[in-house]
Length: 242
Image: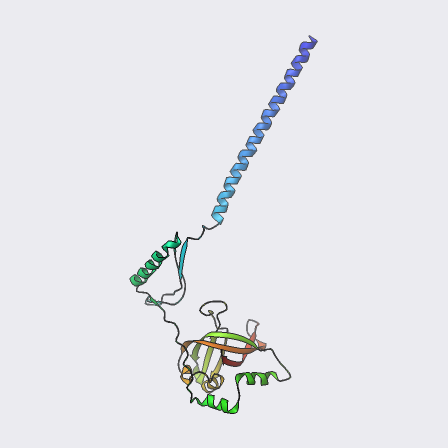
């Protein structure tokens, strides 16, 4: 009886160990299923958060349609295709779209007219030997010297104001092409002052509201007086042809 009892005890121990192993196996399988489900959900979330890759061909056209829907001047239209080989097809569709909608490309601003040889302001400055650089040097040769900064202007707009004043806006192209969206620097002068400051441009440049492509260097210093945003005003010291 002792041997039989001992054998039964061993069998019960083996059954308990077997049951424990089966229970552990079930727990591992449950954890594996939960892990796989979490991975599937994570993959779906990543796909939803990440945009699809760019198409093989992308053509961007900047435009803004005016009141009668004919002139393209700003904004953006994007046309895409799966392969680079389809670029000509995309351009052909763009041409068809423009013809169908009667869109026209905005003409480029006309170059500012050059000053005539007999310009009186140029003659006076040559006779006196004064140049914008000399004027700037004299300005800096004072007790309160400020460093002169420069802007390379590629675009200029003219805005006549009441009282005989004219507002001139200068645009660089360091932030946006073909020129920055907002003027980098501007100033308001009379016609006579503008002729003296920019003798290399024809006087008729300033007669009407207009816009021009230019190649100018505008030198300025930072004023001690801040504007409404707390930034110092830019005081123009000279304007010269680049």
